[in-house]
Length: 147
Image (cartoon, rainbow, N blue to C red; front, top):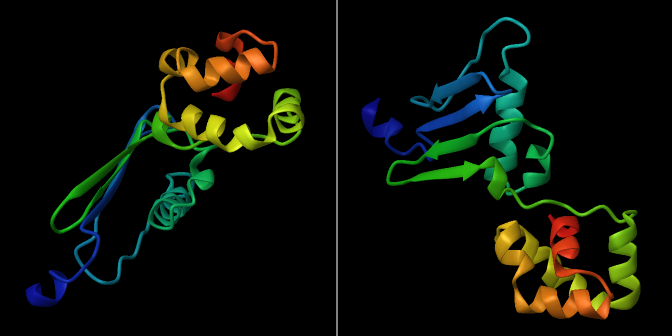
């Protein structure tokens, strides 16, 4: 059975700081895993989070409160911190509508920058400063609304 288990793609899945007070660590040592626990512990949340991470559908993690998710593979480990999850922008936000109207070709770049950079670095980025001047807005305000 050990030779068969070594072929498993994921060795462990863990969510730390779930709702600020729980760490859920699930070792995956067989091809089939049965989760049994009382209601409200986080079984469905855990499975949804695993699915979201493995399929790169990070929007499924936006509403979930957690510190980090760690997936352990046979030869490496991936840690995803909540603050690293790409944020989706909302089409109906006034600032997004204004950017789409005035700078439609820059919207995707601004979104990508806001996902990659800290608010401080974003505020000082030349592309953001240029875009803010075209929108007649302070770079700091555009940086905050982009986050």
